[in-house]
Amino acid sequence: MAGYKRNTYLINPHFQIKFSLYVCGLVFVSSIIYPLTIFDLLSSFIAFIGSKSPEAAAQLQNKRTSLIVILTLWQIGFTALVFIACIFFSHKIAGPMFKLQKFLRAKKDGNEDGKLFFRKGDYFHEVADDFNDAFNELEERHHQDLMYLNEVNSYISNLGMVVPEDKRAVLSEITQRLNQIQSRFESAD
Image (cartoon, rainbow, N blue to C red; front, side, top):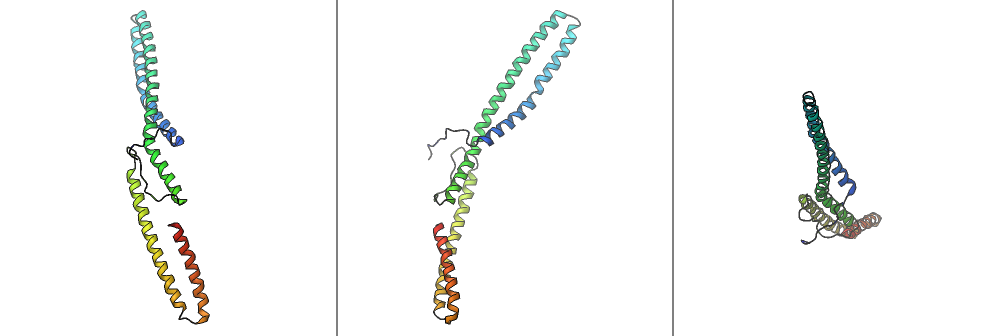
């Protein structure tokens, strides 16, 4: 699996696009301060120059307009670049969550016996390790409980041979119920 590389970057489009738009919104709002400050500063400078030389003020107004257009285009380009970077970044978060969800569904359906793993470069490898450790522990406890149920069932069967006839019906019912529980345990394996 070392050579596996996912080509789909929108694994969870709702999360990834929402995350990217949120980050881009913050970047856009926080970085719009610079063009507005430059515009205000140039407007004040043009007003000052306009009182002394109206033709120089007109040239500066043209330059200010060009600069604001360039800054606006730069802002849009930078925001688009941040959006794309966020899609790639969120891909490394959404991928492991998708893989975990897929693994849990397969585990629930009884189609998964292996270990959970994430791709190299993905985030949350510790989640996969903790998840595998937790499932190993649960499976070990499950196995121990099944062995104990087998022992209890055997004891009750032996006990059924020595108890009076009127009590055997109760023991038979208990044995039947234990057999049902054991069959559920064994089918889960």
